[in-house]
View 1 (cartoon, rainbow, N blue to C red):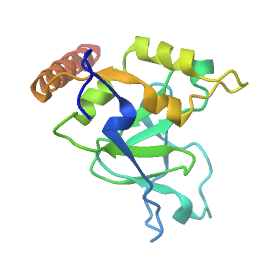
View 2: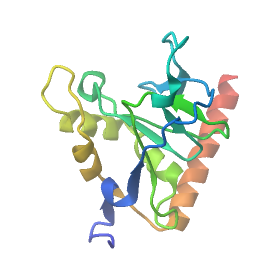
View 3: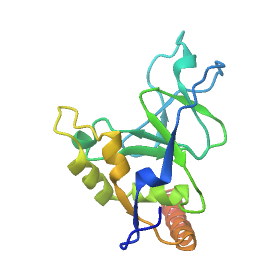
Length: 170
């Protein structure tokens, strides 16, 4: 699975689905993801809910929802970065990077924080009322894949700029 002539790779080559259910009934907080690609506490009433059907998300796990990609012109995806696990709906697809020596998780996530990627997801979404982005189509999306060193430089630069913006807003 080497990079093609353009230095791009399909996402499906770089990731693997995980499905870690809360079969032991841990009492973690319930979360979802929003169109800003952030995790947010659920607004649903979870009292008395059987949490064993929900998925556990741990640090380094991506959460994807292809629903409403076309309507919102946004690929709903988030990368979980906290140390405390959370629970999410089984309707979400969860995945991790197969090989961190090939792609840095934060680098992949940066690719999805670009407006161009959201527009491309909108273009790929089906023509249904909900305008979903199918998982198979998502996996076919190609991303540029520079060396791991360049990826790290880009991640460091992105995080530095993001921290500066947050500092200025505060």
